[in-house]
Length: 312
Image 1 (cartoon, rainbow, N blue to C red):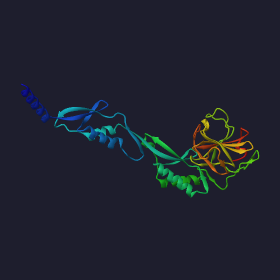
Image 2 (image 1 turned 180 degrees about the horizontal axis):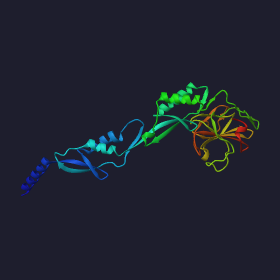
Image 3 (image 1 turned 90 degrees about the horizontal axis):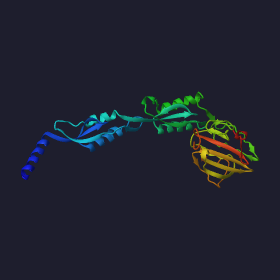
Image 4 (image 1 turned 135 degrees about the vertical axis):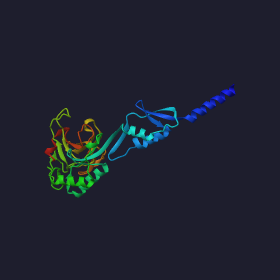
């Protein structure tokens, strides 16, 4: 009887395998979309053709719900349809696009596709206008709406920005004509401007981002701009300090101090002796900051005074 049972099972299995074949039923959001002969094969196609989708300005690709699989026996005439499954997944792709704006004082002048293109435009323009300080910044933009993207080639972006310089849409400050007051503070002469840029907030003004009046002078300029110490002194503080962000303080003697805040990087260290014009830090936007700029303070015996009485 046992032998007869085994033979019977074998015959039934053979008949089933002749008529049917095992495949994986693929479902998305609970709806069957087709069959695949191999889960590994389909997952590889998903990685390459869906999640690995590449096109102009594409940054990230996600799919809200990945497929589920159930092993089934289906009629041998039933065909697998991996390509159709891929198309169904592609319809549910969520794509984030990335591009880069080139701006001056937060006013967008043009846009390009890649960070490399943006750097090429900015660096090229600065080289061609080496006698001027160009206040150009690069802003990374992300969107899910490809229609928003209106980018140009490097060549056209350069032409548009050059036209903006000629039309004075972009301020191009002549490096050799910038006037400083070279004031004397308590017997200490502040002989060097720390950065060249545009004043974005003056001493003593009120603002929604601070609880008291402004204790210094904000000078907007691109992130990474070298910050030069105004005169000889000794670094007494160089670390992160709350709303000031990365802050460096320099003691110049006679009770005179200068503070340099929101830095992206601190270069000078505590105890270091610095000379007028030495680079002590780089411009940034750390701490309580709305954009890349230097917050400069001048203090006499611990009390802040208006830097514009002595410089700028």
